[in-house]
Amino acid sequence: MNKETLLARLMANSQALAQALEGVPHDELEKPGAIGQRSIKEVCALLTAWDGEALRRIDYITGRCLEPPHDVDDSAYWNNWAEMQVAIKRTMPVRGVLVDMIGTHQRLLTRLAELSDFHIERWLKQDPQATQPYFTDYLAQIQTWRTTWDKAHPAPGGLKKLWQSVKWWQK
Image 1 (cartoon, rainbow, N blue to C red):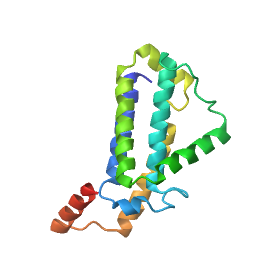
Image 2: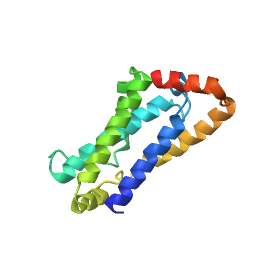
Image 3: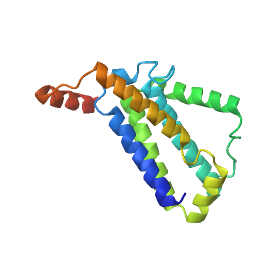
Image 4: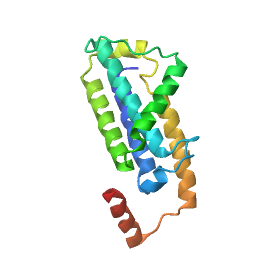
């Protein structure tokens, strides 16, 4: 995979996620059990954390950071890490988690765009998470959740729809 393909995939995934979350009231995004035991907010916290981890791994590959990433096969470590990431964001409002997620993802896209082909190739070889397989999995689950949610909450029409979209963006 080359840089342009990877960037296109990451941008398409983030756009698909934005579409899946658009118009859903924030309190719905906090309800547990949307994805396994997690809320959509918690999943977004994990996606944000993984983007941050990707930035750290890129820093290691490029020599900006000398501390190597943790062993990818240490599932106990990564399970604990995931729980800590969710706990950190749990007290934040949904809007804060979404803003953080968008900002961190944008920093990752910018960093990738700046990387040389040499560094991209090294990163892809050394980091099994570089292509973000977890994002693809979570995105599919969020889209399935959204389909179910839409069936239970039919979209209003006309002025009511406009008012709800204005209220959603103000949160």
